[in-house]
Image 1 (cartoon, each protein chain N blue to C red):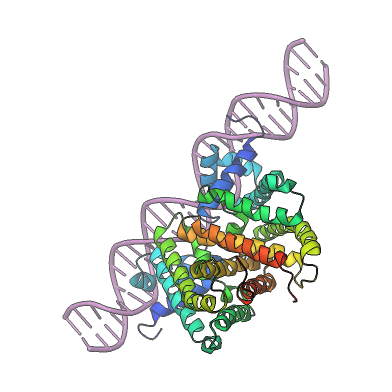
Image 2: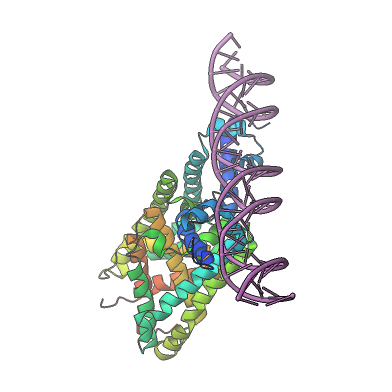
Length: 202
Length: 202
DNA sequence: TGTATTGTACATACCAATTGGTATGCTCCG
DNA sequence: CGGAGCATACCAATTGGTATGTACAATACA
């Protein structure tokens, strides 16, 4: 008997956990309900369909992530490059937890649904892009400061960081442990250092 | 009425195509059979279960990929660094085709099954690792030649390249187009250039 | 060589279980 | 009382998997 009106949030939280563990297709509506301690009656009162849940879960996940990253200590650093490297370090620190906890719901869902569920694909695309965009300001300022003549764009570098992170998650799932992911993010960090530390002719 | 014994191969080829498009869970056994022009009787004659197909498909995919890359022209270059950069360029060239054609079956499947189907997870892990391992020799030789004092290991760099590639696929699926993936691989290429062109103190 | 036997490679028909989704009802608050 | 918030019971469709049948090639044997 849940306190009124918090049920929707509980369903969304449950969806995050279950989908990140089993994937979108493998999680049934009943799975989510059971994990939330509710029934299908409640579920379909709050969501029109399973796809509707996925879109809402993507938004919920993005909002949660946004809260975590914007409140992280590295955000208070004054230097833009330090903030960027701080972001990578922060991501590495998160890898200490269990796999379904540091893994990305958006990357997981979009692989399964990009051809079959356009609405989910678009939601994932949007939130991944927005997260990447949240890095662009720091990257642009760092570039202005440390590598003004470089030819890459801040937008592309921001997307690249997300690619490394998403790929690191894939490898971590394959290996069933976060060690590989940490190594990959170490390489990402080194790339950023190289990119900004030494202004090259090109 | 297919020529004898080629039916299994047709089922595997069909599985590659369908699973890379719809994912593992969303593809039914009937989907694979229909795409192969066969029936379930044939399917379960050749495979014990759907999971069995997935494991076999992973192997089939890896073998196919191995054939493609080992026959690629860049393999004949004499310089190990040129071969490594040639690998990245080759991957970029492949991005011209349709999404399900350049996408990785292993990365797609492992995201959906890493917690629920250990056998599939292990198969994907093994083949991804083997593909990464196929880069280690060139990386190691390039390191000996161009960056002998660097502190990263060839193994970790090989895995990093795979992470970037897998992540690029995720973004490409989200965007529903290969352009992002190409940008990410461009950054990967730049990283490799930086890593080997300029021996740094660290 | 002709024929019975066996095993492979499928097709057809079917099944129990699970799925997303619905219809209906209860219950509590305004 | 009336509707939001939920539970219960149910449904049609789909799922992976099985049981059975059959065409045909290879082998065994006479």
